Image (cartoon, rainbow, N blue to C red; front, side, top):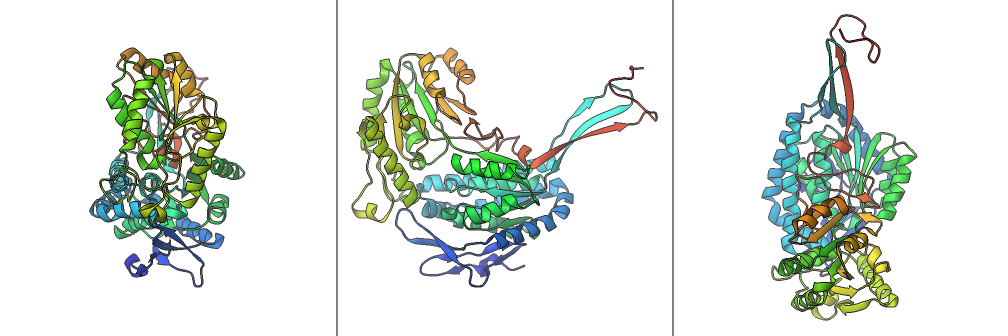
Length: 506
C-alpha cells in the first residue's frame, strides 16, 4: 500500500491526484486528465485522472472483495476508525477549509464550516457502531422471540455534488462504512480535490484496502458504469433533478436501490408580527450565503402586505453594503459562483426574469473590473415577482431572490406549497399558533421557525418531498437506513411446531 503523500506532486500550477483503488493511489499510464480551477481567480487547483468505465469496474471489484471482511468487522471497531477520521479532519481543518474556498468559492468562514460539518457528522455517526439498532417485539405465540437486525447492503456507489464538497461525501461515506458496507465515491469534477483530501483522511487512519475507493471523471462514463455494475447494491446520489431522474431510471432497470437528494425552491414567510431585524439577517444569509448555491437556499421571500414595503426597503439598504469579493478575505460576505457554467445559467435566469416582466430591484449582472474580471462574480440580485412565474417556481441555484407579496397566512401557505419542490421552509412570526400550524401546513422535509431555510444540524434527518428526492433522509439517526437492510428473525424455543395466525394461545 503506497502512501498518498508520495502520489501528490506539488507544482507551480496544481496538485496532481490519482485514483484511489484497493488502498493505493494510482495514475494509469497516459490517462487523460482534467483540472479544477479557483472560481475567484481562475488559478489551477488540482489535476485529476479522467477515469474510464474500466477504472470504475476495477474500483467496484476492490470494494466487492473488501466487503466480506469489513462486514464481519465488529461494528464498534468500525465506529472507532471513524472517530479517528474525525480527529484527522479536525487537525487538518484550516487547510481543508481553505481548499474548499479555493476550489468551490464559498467564503472562508463557510469553507471552514463545511469541514466542521464533516467532523461533526463523522463523530456523530461513529456512535452507530455501538447501536445499529433493530427492535424486539412480542410474538403472538408462546416461547417464541421476534426481533429485527440491520445488515449492510454491500457495495455502495456514492455520487456527490460540488456545493458541500467535504460534508456531503462524508455524510454518505461515514454512514455507509459504519453500517458495514464498502464504498466507491464518484465526486463532482469541479471539487474533486476536496473529495481526494477527504479520502486521504480515511487512508491515514488505516481503513482496509478496498473498503473505500475514489474514481474521478465524467458522470456519463464513471457514474453510469457504477450504476450499471450488478455488484453495486445501492446508489446514493445528490445533485440536480434532471440528472437525478436519469440516475433513478438507470438504477431501476437493475431493480437497484437509489437514494436521491435533489433540488429546492425554499420559501421564507415573514408575517406582519415578525421580528423584522431578525428576519432581515435571516434572509440575507439564507439567500446569499454560499452565493445561493445550497439546495436549502432561501430563494423565495414571502412578505405580508402590512410589512412588505418597510421590510423590502430595509433589505435593499442592507444589500448595498453586502461585500462581494475574494472569498479568502474574512471581511467578504459572498464569493463567486462555482463555475463558468453556473455563472451562465444564473445570468440566463436573470434575463428570463426581465423578459417575464419581473421588477429588478437590485443586482442583475455579472460583476466586472479588478478582481471580478478573474472570476465568476454575480451581484446579489432581488426581483419582485408574481407567484407562477418561472423565477418563482424553478431552482436557480445562485444569488437570486424572488420577493412575493401575500395577504394572509393561508395565501402564504398556498404560495409556499405551490412549487414542485419540498426541501426546506421557514416562517418568521411571534404568533405561537401560526408557528405550530406551519409545521403541519408547509409541504417540506424541513421547517424552521424564526430562522432562515439553511442551517441543518447533523443529528437531525435531512431531506425532502416531491421533486426534492425520493423520500429517504440523510444525517440524523436515520442516516444508516439507506445503507442497511432489515432482517426479521423468529426464534422458536417451544420445541414444537407452532402456527402463527392459526394456533390459539395456551
